Length: 268
Image (cartoon, rainbow, N blue to C red; front, top):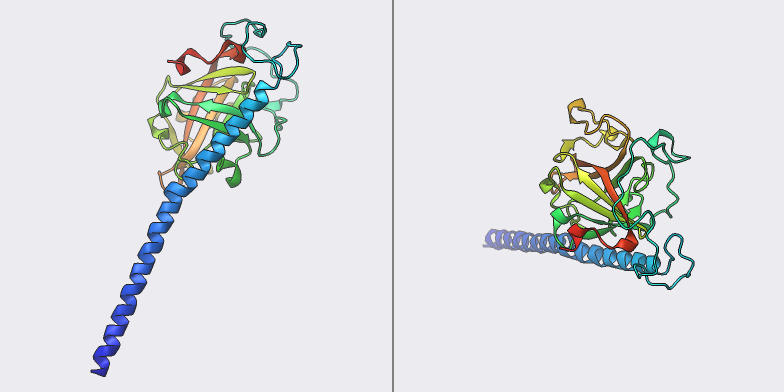
């Protein structure tokens, strides 16, 4: 009898332990999937709102009316004309951009400076782009690899984002296709990048994908063979792991002044 009671006590204790562990696992999954996502979405929305407020308080280039003027009003000059401008790959790199990409972009560390739109990820998908790729930064949006080119500059403008957790910004990364557009604005200009190929899967040590002219370990995967104005997007793979990386490359195809409004593809 005494042995039977002891066995029942052990079984009961193990059962209670399993239930407790199960509850903790469920709570962890809820935290991972929902709570971090809610906080990240709120942080991203707040950052975009801050950027829009900051941009609306700044005069457009060549506009002497001062802060507080409404951007996009008829009095606003349209730098470079009202239509889209095609970048010229033959232009010389800007001063201070050795190797086709600046070592320092002038953006405040950890601060947002642009907003990215990827129609392939959804009609309403947008995320702020912040300076650096540290974990705390990626919880608020996308992160710019600091030592790569600045937005729109000659070289490789490289940006990282989470595949899962913290808002799942790049959850649908494998769905990207050649010809997809990525739109990025810094409040002054809209930049239109066009993807050149499907995402490339590689190892974390393949850092050549961030070079001014991307040079992956697999030469057959190299998207470009000459200097230009490029965009690189990176995220983790598999979906719930980080043993590999997915890379997407695009080239800058067009620009237009912010005063001319959003690109047509974002207003349909």
